[in-house]
Length: 631
Ligand SMILES: Nc1ncnc2c1ncn2[C@@H]1O[C@H](COP(=O)(O)OP(=O)(O)OP(=O)(O)O)[C@@H](O)[C@H]1O
Image (cartoon, rainbow, N blue to C red; front, side, top):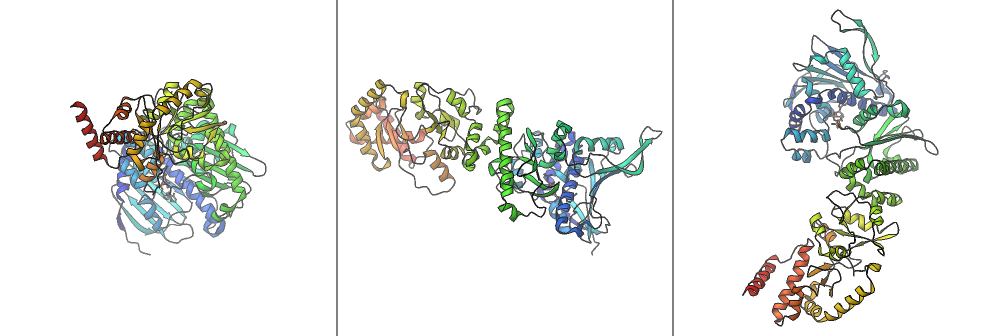
């Protein structure tokens, strides 16, 4: 064993994080204790789990606990646990570096503006480093259960830390905080116990401190050597609902989710029947920074009869509910359940299905009874929930009811229209739910495809999230009404059109045959077909995809993502009433007519957010036509 002290440097990100955190969290500095207790409790959970297979790890000391002490003279606060501890390598990789995936992109988001970044730091979670909010030196001594060597890590939080091998009889981790000037209020029995009760009452193992035995002359508590548990020390989810306060639920959430903000809502239930389990599931109020990171692991924690087993989103929650946090505690699964067993387990499938129903029920309840909260939820997680329409066949209808969109009747830009709202406002004779997909709200709102719908006062949903193509590719109808893209297929307004409309359209088609042919000839292979439109009232032309073809918007998205797409040709619809089209119809000069036809096509492509293959020729053509017109 080498007792030599080594000095190592923090990873750059750690330095950045420390600086930012000390500044932005100072006003909420008490949370350091919650974070350190939370880690200690996790360490106990890990030991209990590893100890199932290797009981010798308990080293004849099976009572898991956390101890907090302070020393007025030395001006230190100590948090010790007899959990799993850390090996030397673990100390280096967990404490000297940030091993979270997505860390790099998180740091790229930081603006340098402390106020804005303070919000982001909450999303990232600061954990152990929060010790440096109140301490100017932290000494962590740890010995991994079952190992002989202990290691001492020490740092002043300024870019470097030292490591040395030491002796430590008790397994686990002891953290000594050397308080900064001005933090002496923490050297107080009453104060520390108050913080523990406030933030960590729900921790399932005892948090022990010395017992008070009266008051001294200075009015301060005199402590005895006897220890007492400051917290309730029972797993929160095992308590009955009526015994848990709102604050306790909230603090427990912060512990399981490693979050700083209060949750939006939660569901706590004991399920009996074929499967017996307790679930305490939370909807966070804010999305974490790595919500879209496929590598992200943290999710719902699985316990079996109070013993922590693992934390894994995929097995316990489907991907589209990956924002859900909390605990599922099964009474039936075997304690030695492994990831492989879980993979195959019918019991887990049943628990998962039950929990999904609970979460959807919770969301339904919010949407009906607390619409403001639901709006807040939708803002943070709506796009993720939308994935469920394609992912969870069994619950498709329920998820569809929870969807919210912007529509042509929306006042602002917030998605607040549900499919049921839409159906409730449908015009007489309307039998479809119309929608348009586009890259931006402006592109959707101003699309020529909407003109006839505006004229008839028919509402159209404006779908501008990337995931919307996935939604409309999986959801074909809602409540017996088909979902119909306004940019696909021949326009069929059903009973929204009266006989007179249909007759007029027929006549227009008949009359515009020559100009349609002219355009068709000029555009040749670029289009599948040219036809006179019933959609347009103001624009001269628009492009329409085939009923069963991929939408132009999806095609562009896939191409942008680097996929090879065999695009299908669009149909060009022209508006024979438009002056430009009339001009084209009467144009005797074949070359100029061809130029006009090409401009019509190019404009239609641009108007729906497409990209011209040959923009320079488009500009040349436009300039030529403008000069000719002004001559
Ligand atoms: N008391 C402890 N006993 C054993 N391991 C610990 C202890 N405290 C921290 N660790 C290890 O260090 C890692 C990093 O801790 P840290 O608090 O920085 O982050 P975290 O708890 O993983 O996540 P978060 O930052 O979201 O709180 C932990 O994941 C754990 O492996």
